[in-house]
Amino acid sequence: MTKTEKKVVLASGTFDLLHLGHVRFLEEAKKAGGKDAELVVIVARDSTVKALKGKTPVMPEDQRRTLVESLKVVDEAILGLDDFSIAKVIGKIKPDVIAVGHDQDGIEQEVLNAIESENFFVEVVKIGRFGKRELDSSSKIVRKIIDSFNK
Amino acid sequence: MTKTEKKVVLASGTFDLLHLGHVRFLEEAKKAGGKDAELVVIVARDSTVKALKGKTPVMPEDQRRTLVESLKVVDEAILGLDDFSIAKVIGKIKPDVIAVGHDQDGIEQEVLNAIESENFFVEVVKIGRFGKRELDSSSKIVRKIIDSFNK
Image (cartoon, rainbow over all chains, first blue to last red; front, side, top):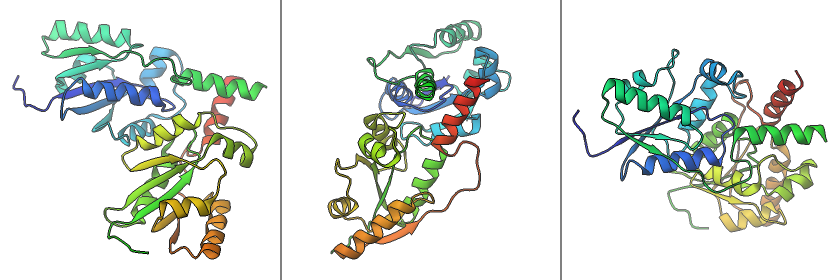
């Protein structure tokens, strides 16, 4: 595989109820590609989230994608494949670096399996958690909304 | 007042649970300043929202501000003054254009009052609504979360 100087970093996620935890993850992901890296983000389809987590996100997929692409740190945001396949995504985007979040062990394992089976030449970088901030996860935001409603 | 070619546009809001309606509003606001306009956004403090709407936002003010400033369209996002005063904000930022949203009649009136009393030289532009999209307001998002919890 030929490598240009500008590295392509791939990150993925649901990005429901966009919050600072998402932005920090994407910023660290891009940094992992070094100077002038390009950050491509795969935004999970509603059907994929439903299949994996048993419920669809609050925000529909097209709005989640557009909002992610509205972020300074993101160069391109694309919806995931209907038949979610990490190997297909890697084959299509050809990233130099794949960034996985602290809560993305499942994705990390799938990436590692795909790299092994397909012989992809790609670096996997695990992004840490950024201290404990209030409301740095979508489920915490949902919980706060429901709690204040029940008061 | 001396005017440089690059116009400064001022927009304001709470920006709780960031969604596409916010992004579209800010994009249209910036366009109102013409080519190369700079967009400064005032993000309402928790105390101001509490005083005006009787309840604090879901997301704390510092996180709302940082998230707004993470958007491509935004050049600078700053928290509002503790003693919310449109006249003080206009005097400090010295915008060429102030953009008000379709649901910001109160702010629009305050801006017009400030312009009249202080003789500010500033254009006020009302930004329309962008069709009807699902979940283009924070209260609709809260409603959807609570509805799905109650099912």
